[in-house]
Amino acid sequence: MNEIRSLPAIAEMDHGVLICVGSGKQGKSCTLHSLVDICFPDREKYLLDTSGVDISIFPNYGLAHTVDDIPVGAVAVIEDVNRVFHSRGSSKDATLQKWLGVISHKSNVVCITTQSMASTDIEFLRSQDVVILHKRMFPEDIEFERPEFRNGQMVANEWISRAIERHPDVPEKSWTFIPRFNECVSIPMVDWWSFANSHMLREVKVCS
Image (tube, rainbow, N blue to C red; front, side, top):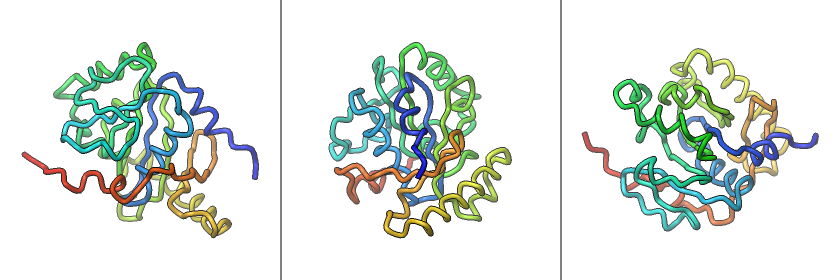
């Protein structure tokens, strides 16, 4: 196997956005938190969430209720980003625009999971160093993906399928395609990951 270029490059990011995209229960959260653990072991880590989730199952993470709670130099993780920033929310609320406008000055890396780029605010892709991490996406979900990402997701599915076939001993949901580096990599699960972590939103109530 060729030397992996993507993970060392991500580890060198002073600021930017990591977007992990794929259908539900395809390992997005586990991959993202495992990547953060590998690439940013010495940086402060925060979950940005407004729903009052219990973060005690995420060791060494702080809880941020607003973007102003994210300190300089920290890594901010947003699970299922559309709950916090709606896909077209920035047209009504400038908070996201203002925050992303200063993350380079604050040396923040913002990490998000999303089931589709169609449900992700486009502001995350503007004027930032963005690395997209593709997990598998079901055909019916690809149909509703943003047109500019649809073909890329189909390519990612093919790469991941080939990796699974060639490496049957590797957990299938660990495979992630990173188009910037044209690499499909298996990201080892962080040792503290559990069922509770992957179902952290189970008790969240959705209010109008």
